[in-house]
Every structure is written in C-alpha cells, then in structure tokens.
Length: 534
Image: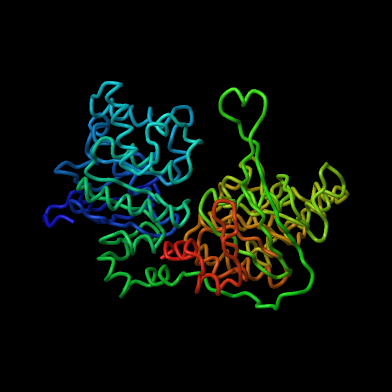
C-alpha cells in the first residue's frame, strides 16, 4: 500500500436517494493509492449502490456529496466526462460474470473491444493483447479460451475473463463487487490470490464489496462496515476484527453457522441408497468419427452412499467434481447406472404414476431463489404449485389453507396474520432470505422425505444464512427429513452434515463422519479444500 497522504478516492457526505427516499446517508470513506479497502454489510445496507453511484451507474438515483478522484469531483462531472473515467481509470468486476458478459460474443472479442475503445488499438493488436491479459489471469490455453463464449467457460474462468476485461484499460481503482461469492472454495482462493497479485503488479487500489468476512480478513488492508445506509465502523482489518466497537459489527462477526442437529445413531430405514452409481453424458467426437457416433463422458464414477431419516449427507468438491450430476441422479432428472433407490424404489424409466409418486418424495431447494422462483407467479401459485400436480382433487380453498400453513411453518407468517396480503405478492417484493424461505415452503408442501439442498445459503448474507440454516435444522428435527447437501461452504457442512462425501473428478475420494473427515482428513485433496475454506 502507498504511503502517500493524498487519497486516490476521497468520498465525503455521499447521499443516495430514490424517489426522494434516502438509502445512503451521508457516508465518508477514502481509498489510498495501492490500498485494498473492503466495504462490508448485509444486502440492503447500501454497499453496491454507493459504489455504483460514484460513477452515476445506479439507475434513477439522486446523488449528493463529493467523491474526489485524482483531483476531480466525480459527482460534478458531465456524462461525457464520466464516460472517460468509467472502465478506464475506474473499472468494475461484478458478482455474476454470466450476467455481466455478453453471451453472444467470445470473451476475447469482448476484451478486445475495451482495448480498441479505451486504448485505441487496432483489431489485431487488441486481440493479441486480450490473449495476453487472459494469460496473465492464469486461464489455461488463453488463445483457445479467447474464442470461447461465456457459457463454454467454468465459473472461475468466467470470473478471470471479467478481471482481464477490467484490467484492459489499466485502471487506478478496481471496484470488485462480490467477485468470489458463487465460486468454490479453492477457486475462490485462486481468484483472491490473483487479485492480490495483480493489485501489486499494477499498483492499483481495490475497493472490495463483500459480505464474506473470511475474504476480508485474508485480502483487505482496511474495512468499512455498512448498516442501513450508514458506515457504522471503519479501520484496519486487524483492529475491527479483533476489537469491534459497534454492535452491528459484532453481530456480523458472530454470525457463523452453529451446529444444531440430532446426532442419531446409524441404522433404521434408508431413504436413498446408492451402490456403484455412475452418471455419463454423450459428447461429440472430433473429426469424421463424430458424424457416425458419439463419445461418453463419465461425470460420476461408482459412488456409493446411504441417507437415513433425520440425517444430512454433505457432498463437497470443486466445480466439475460431479456433485451436481450426483444430485440430478437422486432427483431422477438424469439417468444413472448402478444401484439407486429412493424409499426402496428405483427410478422408473418412463413417465408413470409410480414416477409421480416417487418424485413427490424427493424435492429440491436451489442456490439462487431469485432465479428458481418464477417472477410471473404469485406466492400462492409458487408455493401451491406442487399441490396442483400431486393433489389435483383439492379445492382452491383447501390448497390456500395448506399454503398459509406452510408459510407459517417456514417463519414467513406470524400466527395471528391471516396472510391474505402475502398470497398475491411476487418474488421481487421479498428479501433474499424471504425468497429462500418461499423456496423451502414450495419444496415441503408436498411432504417429501428427502430434500436436495443445492448451495441453499451461498447467495445469502451471513446473518440471513444463519437464520435459514436454523430453519432447515428445525424442520429436519420435526419432520425427520433426509438432506442431500451440495455445498462448497465448509462452515455450512460442519453445521449441518452428519456424513460427508468428498468428490474430485467424478470420484468419491473420501467419505465418513463429518467431524472425522473435516478435522482429520486423510486425502490431500480434502486437506486442500479445508485449508482453502480458511
């Protein structure tokens, strides 16, 4: 970090309003040249809108105050002057690269476009530089990856491409908005190390927006904590983390998942039984052979496990390890060979009444409730959808009573609330934690015995994550549910899982009791995952 006394960015009295209502209340912070400042807080605290408002990128926002960057007040610049700053002196890396990257163009072309626009390069020069930038971020085979579309890259590779694009204009300040939230622990560590390395090499400052406190501890020099549009505490990472002064900071630091599960002995009925389970996909073959036949990619090799009532089986591993394919097989959404039975019954090969009855027993809660809940359906339609399929003879009034009861069970409705106002609301009217409770209600309303939890808390803030985990723990105790938990968050695994499967390249490399595996891992890969979780 630079020892210069003059801040690179000095923000004073930043106030952001929408339709006359203040959402950021006169905050002050500064970023020194070469410094890494983390802006932390829960969703709705004002972190992202504060950063976007500096360059007037928050649509419909009224912005007041001062934001002096390299001697000029960003908030007083014209739109034309701001265009010279955006993506040039100040660049952004966004949380979800799949949304930020254009799906219609190869990533190399998108990076080259920035180089042509901001640095005046020719098309050929820009493409060569784009390849060099991809190489500098550690993407393997950068020449080939430059011609790939975003959907053809892994999550970590897409984030590296976003970083390469942000670095194309050689910015003095990089704003990284939740750059590792959706990534596996090892990929998260790689991206963090990459940002740290590039920050030192380029001498740029970084403004990190995040709710991941482990990331802040490992990466940042200073931290500013935001609550409801106010900065309530700021200082060095060591001083704030070791001796937090504000109650909200202490609440954030104390929001680690807590283990609260029934430690029942093994035995009894088996909800899901897998023996030498294998999942394979057809893939095209190169050359003329691809005209006549297709190859085979094995995503899961000979996995064996059992899930009992009231137990949670945690499945951990990096992207591409086979976790999702394993979950899809358990859900009956893809074909699998070997032995797989749910409540003693194998998945039937064709649509049938037997399949419908079995499908009712296995439900899923996805990672991002905003994507998994239809924006065009009301709460009543979303939560009651399963009843229309599995209980077609029920009346509208009976279904509505069941929906309201389910909303109360997941903590969305108080006992005295008739819920009438809730039923006609849409997903966008709820917070992230409320949307995830809706997703859980939708899954539970048909009374399944098994829930597949696909990263159920990774998109949530730490305090909301703790609330959702407590809800899942309570529901498991009360209903005897079996959970198949797919996650890369080791804290969540420790809080929820009875047993753990560790997967790498489609194979189970280690399995056993949760505490045995995580506290004394036998395999080097498991030790690497545990160490990366920090």
